Length: 110
Image 1 (cartoon, one colour):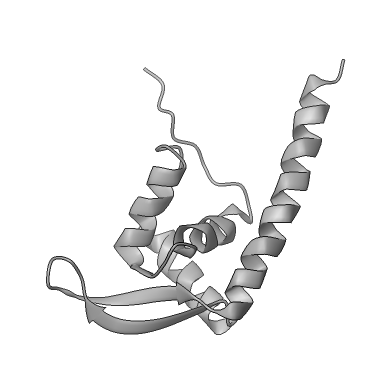
Image 2 (cartoon, rainbow, N blue to C red; image 1 turned 120 degrees about the vertical axis):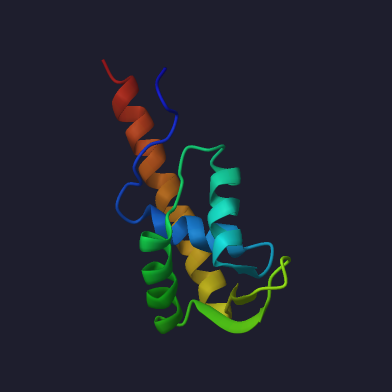
């Protein structure tokens, strides 16, 4: 049986993280679970990919973070979108919509 999971295309992780954080703050594992949920299991983001991306996005000013307690009463770093991050989410969403439409048109072409 074939798995419905697939590899992320370059540049999609940032958009998925931004989208996952759109509704509100989450800790790292929560972000990973949310990405799995919103992609219906197509993308599973492992810590080795997620945490470097979170640090890079925080350095870029797209995310802010603070330490708190998770639902399991464990210390966890929580992330939230900054104003810059919200703008980036809008920009990335528009760009990916254009790319998806172009690819759809190309695949339908005869």
